[in-house]
Length: 169
Image 1 (tube, rainbow, N blue to C red):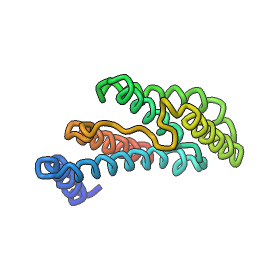
Image 2 (image 1 turned 45 degrees about the vertical axis):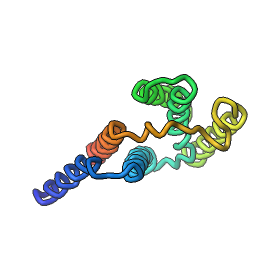
Image 3 (image 1 turned 90 degrees about the horizontal axis):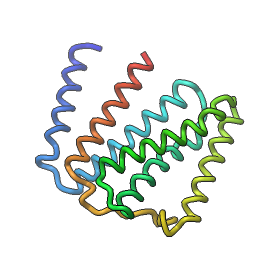
Image 4 (image 1 turned 120 degrees about the horizontal axis):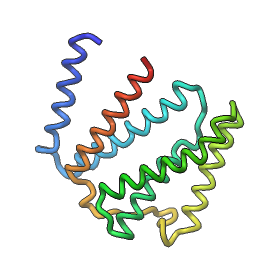
């Protein structure tokens, strides 16, 4: 990388770090979503972009973590940090259980198995509507669009992007 690119990257990071001081609640929520999609896109890039595997069920792991954290926050009153860590652990457990046999499959067999995982989790969310909210999903209190979470999601997006860069070079 050139010095100019490093300087531009530093300016962007500093700007994003200072953004919550002047941002509205909507702006912070928007950036939270953006950081979340950056992290998801980079993780998908690792499995599909670098390996060539077509992962139709990639969002199932994301959904498992999100529903776990959401249920712990909305139904059990957990703090967001503990619920987020528990969601990550549940997604990781699902990835280990499903990934172990599925990553041995090649081509369309892997794609179909991941699509099947996606459907199984979709049906489970619909079946346990009292717990998951079914098609309506879960509603979290608005306090969960806080500045603290903004910084955590920003660091997560930056970390996943850096990890993807290191792996790909």
